[in-house]
Image (spheres, rainbow, N blue to C red):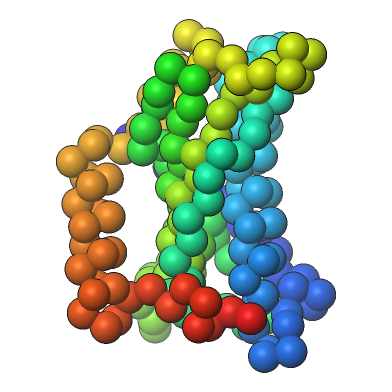
Length: 169
């Protein structure tokens, strides 16, 4: 399974009065990564895939650690966890990769349900065969995806997990 990597620059205006990236800004970061993935990368020059429009049906975000301004971009890793007939689910991690000096640091884990949309008709549409082929390259195995969610939920319930609403203002 492939993963999409997007390096997102941090902007001074992303900070709030508490000195870290504001929670709303993370939605913009995820949008930048998703647009890069679905519209720039998929599936190539001259393709009509994903160009007719799409809408976000749902976001879920777990804030793990505060992210403060620095000059280095943050990595947003994304992959597909579900492909339906007329929707797909993208999972993300906003993080710094592990280095010799520091372990991997995850700031946010998130998930977005995206619905392809026919703008001219004003209604959702089905995922095309070409779009499905592209998305399947980034599809995580269902067991691995649910194990990751279970591990995240277990960490949350043990006190080390989600800081939703507590780290971001």
